[in-house]
Length: 99
Image 1 (cartoon, rainbow, N blue to C red):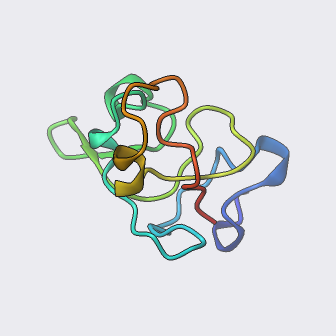
Image 2: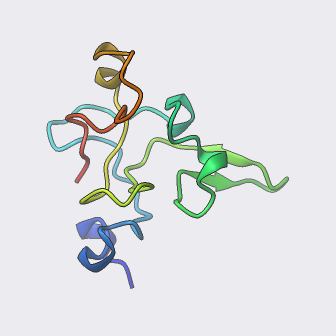
């Protein structure tokens, strides 16, 4: 069972985290996952990047998640888009780890 106070289980790199933390450890607010070009909620349906509404559509949120098997849950921030926009390979991860 995930421990949402600790952002999920270490054994699965916190990919099970479904809490509502939406700021980084540095206090930077997270933005909605739908703004992130690489990790669109529709493309990662089991990662918790959005919540299903009554019509079955995915409604994105800005909570920390780990959709890619990184070391821990993280989020996208506005700082993501002020960095080099030409580097899409790791976009969304540089300095935006959530706790």
